[in-house]
Length: 285
Ligand code: NAD
Image (cartoon, rainbow, N blue to C red; front, top):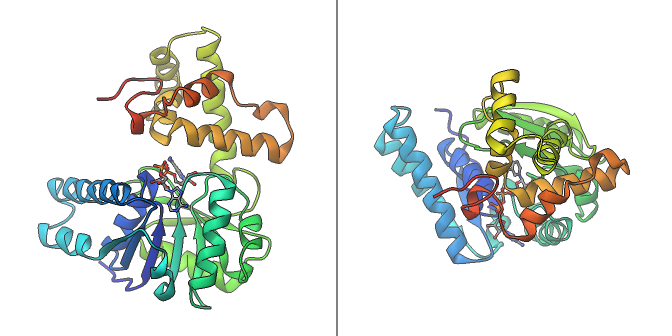
């Protein structure tokens, strides 16, 4: 293992934030995982423990290394760890107002050289950078779900992002044993510009009664060789996150082809957000 020895503040202890904290701790970074509520932090830390134990069971890590990785993660409901951070990675809820508030707050605390990264799935890095006094050191680090498993990090350069910040971020992604692919700042970047309309269309197919969820997913798995059908993938991502991303694409491009499916809106309104709430297009126990 290469020891990255960086100090990282991860904001948001949901499924993405906990995964990012895990891979950063595995790489040797000192990590603070921050959220608004201690209960969310405990849930996030439990997800890290489960992830590390899965690796131990599969022979990918020793018990000693797993314990050392867990010990590198501190929990906090405050943002004060930004004061010592080399990298801040924001992985809070996909809502612009939430992220702008976080960027303003950490920008005021973090040292000059610290890079402020967002794990946003679709929001404008350029706009987030606009909330900071260091727009040249604001960048997108878009991890894939589940973070400990997926190799890609989409690195997104805002209009103001400097070459130096981009190079440092690419290097950091490699230290996390991930593969960086750099893209420009457009709504949904590459990953979700291509993926989300497919998921949204699968929801339309379900709404129209073309087939049931299992059949729609089966067609895409058996017919297109996708490892997971689009509706099960939507449940994994979180239906609220899928809806936010479709809204960003719709607003950002002003094209009706990105209109969110009404059935997706209904599920989100019902609180059926997928795996994280125990029910989405499928039930989860
Ligand atoms: P989640 O709902 O599992 O977790 C979000 C967390 O953010 C919650 O614990 C919430 O309490 C916390 N939060 C909200 N406001 C906060 C604030 N002001 N300060 C600190 N914490 C706050 O969501 P997630 O799936 O982990 O997604 C997080 C981010 O990652 C989003 O931007 C999402 O678009 C992006 N993302 C998600 C996926 C995915 O598959 N779910 C993939 C890539 C990127």
